[in-house]
Image 1 (cartoon, rainbow, N blue to C red):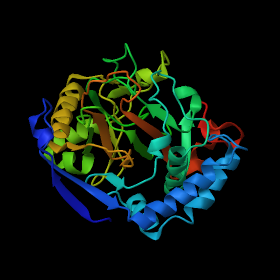
Image 2 (image 1 turned 180 degrees about the horizontal axis):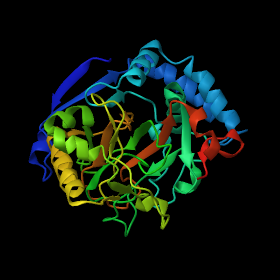
Image 3 (image 1 turned 180 degrees about the vertical axis):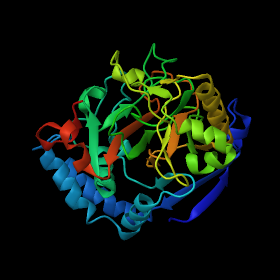
Image 4 (image 1 turned 90 degrees about the vertical axis):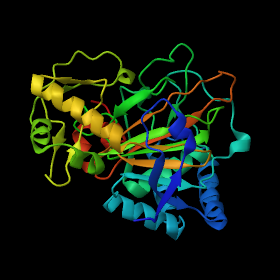
Length: 342
């Protein structure tokens, strides 16, 4: 694993959230020469006007570019993919985003990146290093690179368009093929530099729970529904567990705003799990050029509140999902593409 770096964030202590004052995350600091090499690869991809970001041909070029990425980056990602460590997050510093050429921060809920840019190329290349990029047709029109930006009138929306506290969740936990990894690349920080990525890894939260609670969370006593960003969904869904897999290192599927407990004991177990998450939480404030790679199988994430100004310079994060084994979702992907249609 990359070396663990511990940093104290006093702003976290002063916030209204329950975040720990000590942020400990697996981190990789690219050297100037490594940054320059990644930028060379990204500019080569972004200058190709023949294809859009979602074109299989462009993704194929991104996959080839991954082979040319700096060794330190490839090694850190490979190790993280094999085992994401106790926090389930890798933060990479020093990635190019072409900040001087960025347009105004988008301000609509459906904002995505279809045209090749340096930042979208970086996301695509890293996603190929983790496996393959994917998207979901019902969310953000199935774009592989999506904008996470504050939208006027959506301040209290519990999703990527909001600016109030975003509660803990796995991305698309309801789906049979949820992403294995979530890539979040910061293009612009918020004006006040207070917005923080909140993460809580099950590997740190699980030991805080009694065995009886773990047993309940492993029982099919919960209904998981799509998040608000997927729109209205009245599909009948079968009960399922929140925890699954190995007893000593299980996977988790949960979205605090989209999970329903079917029994009193299940409701109590969710409350205990929420408390464990709040105890194990880590906060990372991303700066431009920082990417957080979240292991979506074992780590939930959210965001602290912030105040947007809607002046074209608000916080701007771009997001891509990755599957380590694309083949398993073949029945959901028309024409063997990268978009899950159902």
